[in-house]
Every structure is written in C-alpha cells, then in structure tokens.
Image (cartoon, rainbow, N blue to C red; front, side, top):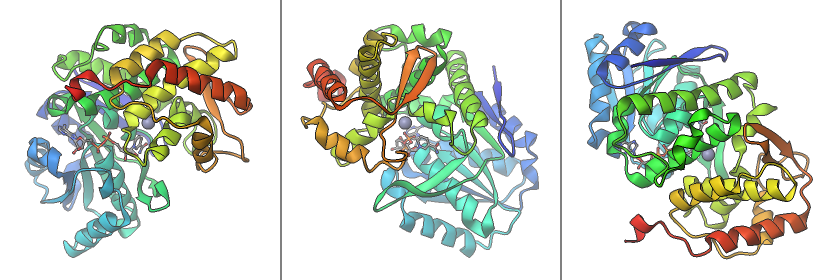
Length: 372
Ligand SMILES: NC(=O)c1ccc[n+]([C@@H]2O[C@H](COP(=O)([O-])OP(=O)(O)OC[C@H]3O[C@@H](n4cnc5c(N)ncnc54)[C@H](O)[C@@H]3O)[C@@H](O)[C@H]2O)c1
Ligand SMILES: [Zn+2]
C-alpha cells in the first residue's frame, strides 16, 4: 500500500508514504529524477550504518545517475554554519552543475541541513527528501522550511525551499531508537489534536499503540494522515503569517523548556509537557478539557523530569522567542479538540498556576525504560 499526499505549495509536490524500494523507485520516476546530471546523497553516520543511505543510492544508480555520498555527523550540532559550509564546499569541489540534485536521507537534522545546502548551492538545485525518522516523516520534511542554527539561536538561518518529492519509507522506522520514535509520536499526536483525527483514540493504549514493529500498512496510514494535517496547514499559509501558527500547539512552553535546560531536554519531551500545559491553560479558560489525554501522552513520551525552576525563568526565555509578535507571548490552545485558537492575553497568575499544576503532575518523572 502506498499513499501519495499532495502538498499544494508553490511549486507543489507529493509526499509518498509506503514501504520498500518500489516506493522509492516509483517516486523518483514520478519526478523524472533520471535527468539529474548527478546526485549528492547527504546523510548522517547512524542512518548510513543502518543501511538506509545505501538503499537510496541503489535507487539513484538504477536510474543511471552518478552518485556522490556526503556524510555528516549525527546530531543537532551538524545544523551549523560550519557543517553547511563544508557541504556546499563539497558540492562545489565535486563540480556539480545546476542539473545536479541533492537527496537528503535522514532525520530532521539532515533534511534541514541538506535542504539549505540545496537552496543555496548555485542559488538553488533540485532536492529530494527521504525522511528516516517519524518526526521527519510527519513534520520536518513537509512545508519547505530548511535551515541551520546560529550561535544565538535555533533555526535562525534558512530558506523556504521545496523538494521535488518526499519519500517516506516506513521500513526505515524499524531501526529507530525508541526514544527517537517517541519524539516523532508526540508531533504526530499533536497533528491528530489539531483536526480531531479519528485515529487519535488508537493512541490511547498503554504504549500509545506505537512501536517500531508496527506493521507497514498501519504505519503508512498513520503517517499519511499526519502528513495530510501538516500539508493542509502549510498550504493554507505558506509563509507562516496565520494558521501555520497552529502547528505550534505545545511549542510555546516547549521552546522555553529547551532553552532553560540548555537543550538537554529532547524536543519531543518538551512538546509533550507543552501539550499538557496547553491543556491546563485551556481548562483554566473554560475551553475543552483534554487534560487526561495530554497527561497520558506526556507520561508515555517524556524521558526527563520537568526542570525545577520558577515560571518567571521560563517567561524570560519566551520573551526572547522569535515567534513572539509585538512583545506578547502567543499560546495555541484548543477551543475543543480539532479547533485550535491563538491567544495572547493569558494572565500571569493563570500561567503560574498551570505551571504549578504541571509540576504536581510530572515533577519527578523519568521514563521507566530509560532509567532502568
Ligand atoms: N523543517 C521543519 O519544518 C522542521 C520541523 C520540525 C523539526 N525540524 C528539525 O528537525 C530536527 C529534529 O529531527 P529528528 O527528530 O528527526 O532528529 P535527527 O535528525 O537528529 O534524528 C534523530 C536521531 O536518529 C538517528 N536516525 C535517523 N533515522 C534513523 C533510522 N531510520 N534508524 C536509526 N537511527 C536513525 C539520527 O542519526 C539521530 O541520531 C531538528 O533540528 C528540528 O529543528 C524541522
Ligand atoms: Zn516540534
């Protein structure tokens, strides 16, 4: 079973979701990738070691396209000016021309970095995304944001650059570490909350129904639905001036938690707490009560305790967030599940009370599997 989701941006492209080499071959054929003068396959050490890069280079070779593999170190540190400079210098040294393509094979780090290299090399060459993490499949590879981190902050340098095609081969998920899988699951669940997806209920079992060993057809359906949510939102707001803000559900607190822990807290953990916090704020405003679901998600997904800091410390980080508008901190809440709203008038005492409530719920929690 293969799903194709149209991302109606300018230019439009398809996200293919399925399992196995056939999907990759068909997706590359659909954009006539065989016309590439060469391809630079950009990946990281973990993804290469798991064999995923080799599968993709095989597909390009089968098209008769000369393949160059550029491997970066795994981890967020590779989204740096230095790593980007190495990559584009590498493309230039290889003598790649305007008809060469870049193909990212990896998680969001590789996708963002390789995408920005593709956007900037020769003022832009064609680009294919082969996401290999759940997060990259349902989130990072959809919407055309590419970029790297500055010393002063995450994702401050970048460009909108759309791929020709995205190919999510769910077979890649089998080698994903459980903690990385949970991070993607949090974003997938966030997408389900934004539209009240019918499959949201399927998440509510003990392990949220997700494991790397889930069968390919189930993964394909879940991921395709998650992609559809993001695709619809970004198509309605390509440049992030309006409804794209909904994707920040849970992220206002998450970004502050990441900053307060010097990025020691994983993004998925921070967003899981952020969703629980958004549920608390919504309840305090008399909106829908989805606290139980949000607490269950955080209980399953969080792999670090909440930092023991006063809310004022977090507020200081929020004041610096680049997504803030006109000096006010904006919160995405749910009027009801499936109906997000953006508010910027939550009083300080309500924010403080919700932070205390969140602490009461999660202060000493560490994911059991990881601490064992
Ligand atoms: N562009 C966007 O719209 C967007 C959206 C959300 C997040 N992001 C970015 O995405 C990044 C996070 O992405 P991520 O969570 O995928 O992290 P990641 O790319 O760092 O991957 C997580 C870890 O899993 C490893 N890995 C990847 N695929 C694997 C596989 N199939 N088997 C085994 N190991 C594998 C990686 O080497 C890495 O160690 C952040 O930099 C974030 O800013 C971008
Ligand atoms: Zn996120």
